[in-house]
Length: 465
Image 1: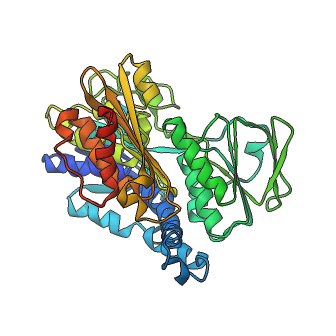
Image 2: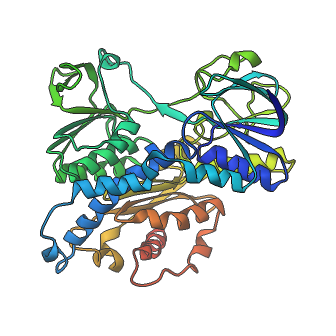
């Protein structure tokens, strides 16, 4: 069986479905090929279930910070209820509603394993074993996402471990949880499971601080908060050997200093790998494995003719759901002939870590700016000392920092650490994207008493007040 469309999309995650939406809005015919669930990693095994696990525990912690409300908190979080709420957010791994949405935009959906088979050609092997041949008049878009990586640790591949899918869909809370990797996923799930009742949680991070890519001080503040609630944080340490006693026995990790750690489950949260191993890349002269490098129009640079695009995690530019959707919107327009460029990937990528305190950042860190040869000034302020921060409770702590381009006098980076600071991030993103002059920001008056008043304090710090 054969069929022809203007656009073929491989992958029906949030990126692929947005490509289809915008291509259809431009009047192009589209088919989306998916081997798993429509909605992809974010909907079922990453963003949504992880935040569903964190939300109730954060609400409880926020109440305990407020005198009066704290006295009304007489029990711990109901882990079973949290897990049930998580299940509802992932629709019990049923993608019917998201598949139906694709039909409402008049995009076709084919379930099966899609592979490139030549220029503008894709084959799809269905679950029943039949093979379909698809041809694209204009473009093929690869939006197959990424999967959890397994680091080169002796014994690690020989034992049962958890990845992001296991930890976000677990049915029970382990008594002892080991977390290999102190990035966003590792820190979020370490805190979630500690607050859900795990008695021992340990994070092992190779670098000198948590959450590489953020400002080092943000990782330090987060580590202090995690340690304060009983999570062991080991930085600058590597795992040399991993073993497990049987399939369900305890996990034993041996560190580089000879220390042994024991846990009931081991979450491996040590990065992501682009899903390009089984895409048929060899049929178009490419080697499988690794991200598909693209230009700012999201065209795969190693393929002539401009017909192959890659969007989202699979291109390795910014492994974030919202950046994948951003790229998808552009791809849907670019294929239709509109002039678009994914320049925000280079200058204004926002990211939020939904721990307590939250860590939110956009643009360049101070070191990244200096490495780029930019003359910068940083200003910072304690979030707890503004009226809005103080009203959140006596134990609130946090910090805000701006990275200012001294020649242009614009904000090129911002980082916030504190309760719910992710909701403040979009203002910073607009400032960075719009290159809003510092003098203009003085006229963006923050409402009182909100945490956003910290913007005024940062401008005053820049002025030397």
